[in-house]
Image 1 (spheres, rainbow, N blue to C red):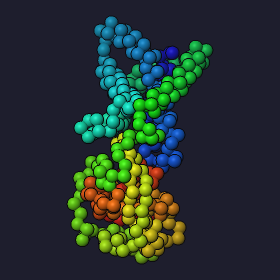
Image 2 (spheres, rainbow, N blue to C red):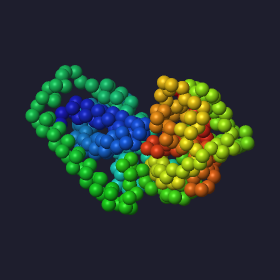
Image 3 (cartoon, helix red, strand yellow):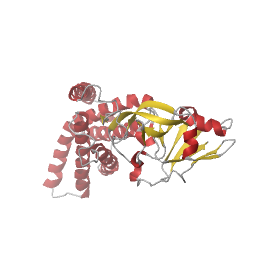
Image 4 (cartoon, rainbow, N blue to C red):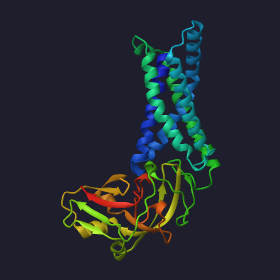
Amino acid sequence: MPRRLTNLLLYLLVVAEVATGILGWLLPEARALPLYDLHRLFGTALVLLLFWKQVVVRSSLRRRLGRGHADRSVLVGALTGLALLGTLGLGLAWTLQLVSFDALWGYSPLNIHVFLALGTLPLLLWHLLRRRERGSLAKDLATRRSALRLVGLSIGALFAWQAFERVADARAAAGSRRASGSKHAGSFSGNDFPVTIWQLDRIPGLDPATWRLGVGGRVAVPASLSYADLDALESREMTTVIDCTGGWWSEQVWQGVSVGDVLAASGVAAGASAVEVVSVTGHHWTFPLDELRGALLATRVGGETLTPGHGYPVRLVAPGRRGFQWIKWVDRLEVI
């Protein structure tokens, strides 16, 4: 495959990998499902493309080192290559069930995979611009050989992706592998599931006697609810899965009050369309109003009072959303 076409495909696939990975985090699970498959397919295509890329790299190094001319782009290229290999290696190891979320002393290899991918993107762009060549890329694309190789890469990626999927399914315990790639971390265990804190926030020590849940924004009657006020509302129960971006999932029985009940008590203004849920740490997320009405403000899990690490006194339970959107230590609901 021509050198410029190989480099362009490499960059486009890395961009596609980063985009599908980030959108897979942000979107509700029902909408993100196709992105999980695309992410693994593009990753497989990248692995196959490296067979062509290594030919380009070896030729370039022989030419430059042979002339005794190795500029800093060689160093950047080496760093880019190592970051890309690390990203793909961790991604493959994760998919094939060779590593788990607790493999690195409690730190998930999936997080390292993400950080390496984000770091690879600017390095690769700089390297691509530094080594760009003059002339029309259309000449590389228009040849029969290039077209056949592109078709071959696409077919090979499809078959290899499905092969990886079958190996991953075979290695995982029955029913434990989710579409997101997250691994089972124990279910129906009360507070005994992993504690993951988004943005590395410290666990706040909140006193339920002084803590208040604020309800404001586009409501008729702003409110400041105590822990006892929430306990006085109708208790609801929800069995649902929390799927953390750290690479684990757990199904639990959550108890608390409906967000819809809390909002109804304050009277949501006509025309309101969204609610921002804000933590005492400042972490926040905005949800469509209709979706959030069905969410839960949980005070208990599996019949146990939430521990501080899991969001005591109140955390959001948002079915179909990734774990970092299940806001812990909820401070207020702001209707928009």
